[in-house]
Length: 169
Image 1 (cartoon, rainbow, N blue to C red):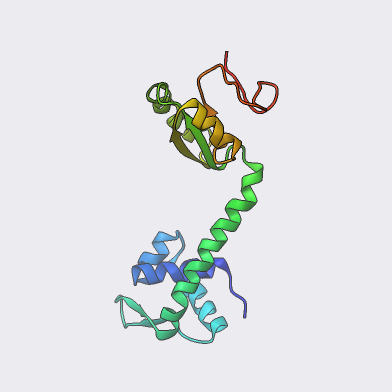
Image 2 (cartoon, rainbow, N blue to C red):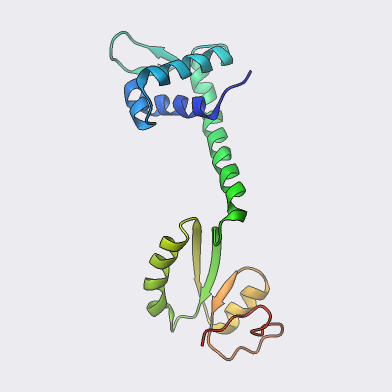
């Protein structure tokens, strides 16, 4: 039994819309092309996924379709995670970035930082944590934060400009 992610995408679209035409529009394919792919998927799975009504009416899931729907959703979620994981090492600043910031500068930096980061690195997911310098240094040392915007000077062991801390002049 083999099927494609495209066929699963089409199955999910028809399930969501209950209509082949609307599903085809949502995935930017012709309705005959979508119908053909669904028919091939049904052949490969060994049964009908949808009960089709005559005319332009809607469709409903068969028992097999209802049984496979959550599995298809899980499959597509996993495929999305696989794609993201494969691309992440090649993309600078992608995935979660846990940034700590001191409260005295947060209101001034955050309004400019977030839109600039989203434009420059759309695959980054910024998590902001506000705390004092000492607390942020502790969180960085425990690897709960990736970076911090702190007040200088910082007197933390192992945190010198030449090692793991960067300063802006």
